[in-house]
Length: 230
Image (cartoon, rainbow, N blue to C red; front, top):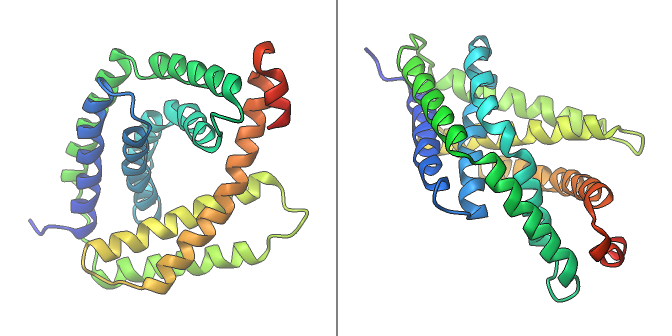
């Protein structure tokens, strides 16, 4: 059986997620959680781009990924707050974050996710598709062009949902170009940097929106003044 570049890369990402998952049971490190999520998102993005018919596998990976969304949003918010300027608020949010961590990353979640990752990896190993280098490169560039067109349509009236959709588009572009680079198929430094910059630009808007939502809905009486100031 011919080894497929895409399948090899997808399995590597899922095995990376599996390894990180076992660490999450004993560590409370935001960076480890982030790396776990990136490995899952890479897999989802590439499946969506190159193998949309395998939507069932993508949905399984999403079911593992989704419970960690709020946890990541809290981690990003905490990283943006100065402990000296907002000591009470920081302490309240850290406590809330740790409680959420314990509520999400339970033994049951880790066991279920580990089992699902193994099942998905086994299914990918059975995939019969063989993707030519030319097709992998061509699809990545076509999607990048499509995402650039969507970005150019952004205007002051663009809804948050559409901004988020374009941001996710640039994540997919970035992951596909990184896949081409890491697999030795092609390296377009300028295009990759462009996708990273657009993703970060739109990500800053999305992060601010998420953080305002957390602050409006979650601030406690003790840190209310600091919360309003922030």
